[in-house]
Image 1: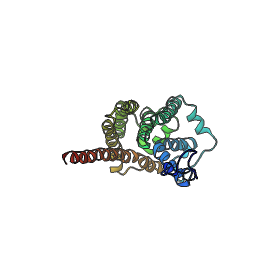
Image 2 (image 1 turned 90 degrees about the horizontal axis):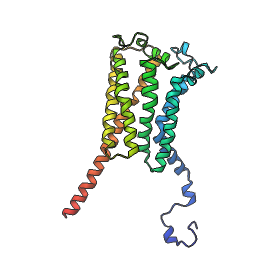
Image 3 (image 1 turned 90 degrees about the vertical axis):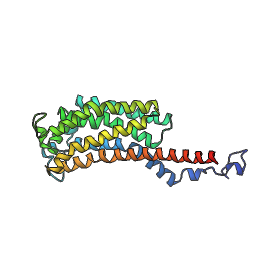
Image 4 (image 1 turned 135 degrees about the horizontal axis):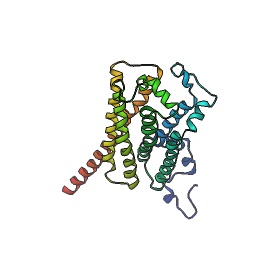
Amino acid sequence: QFWHKGESPQQFKGKASPWQRSSPGCCEGAMLQTLAAWWPALFVLGTLLLVCIIDISRAHIFPPVLDLSGEPAKRVLTSPWFLGMFLPLLVGLLWIRSFSRANKLSSTDTCNMVWWMVNLFWFHTACDIFSGFFMTMPVLTELYAHMSPSHLTPRWHESRAHLDSGYCLELFVEVPMAAWMLYLHARRDPARHLAEVWAAAVQFAGTICYYAPGVAKGETHCWLSYMDRSCGAVWVIFPMVILKRHLDAERAKGGISGKAGKTKAA
């Protein structure tokens, strides 16, 4: 008998027993929900791990040559360019965790907030703008040059003009837009989902324009080129996921409204 003192078996009906609440299925479901909400942050950790252990002088060699001396990690982790982005990112992720719990957000809403946070500080700024455009981030800048040697030419050289156009889109549009999306989510603005579809569409289009010239011309310089495009595919796939989620949500609302209308008419 798992019902509380003073509670009848009928009142207990439908409640989960302690055994049910602690079953492996419940734990597995909770882990999957956490993964669904926080995978963009794990994506950041994966890229950071690569940057901290790869031998940058032989980065073009496959299988990758690792440098476990700690020298690459030291260069990155002590850089003001890195710290200026990563520390605010950590604070932002902690805030999202607290905000999500306080407001009982779904894993989908939490995931979207994490997505905009990691783009704001890491992927758009620390990676693309600081490493690809201004070329100030240690180790990552060299990795970008291995991915696409046109980074070794001056900014706006014809061989890298499409890349610089993408970086400017991020600098002047996508970074401010990511901050705006976080603001809308924090306010629980009812129009945030409409704005989010637009913001995701800009990411989608920017990614296509960034990678299409190199892919069309068959430019592949080493395994890092393949890895770069594989990672870049996330900015094609996830915007479509965002679009589908919001389409499904609006269609569900329409279905509910339609049923309500029929009921009134009857």
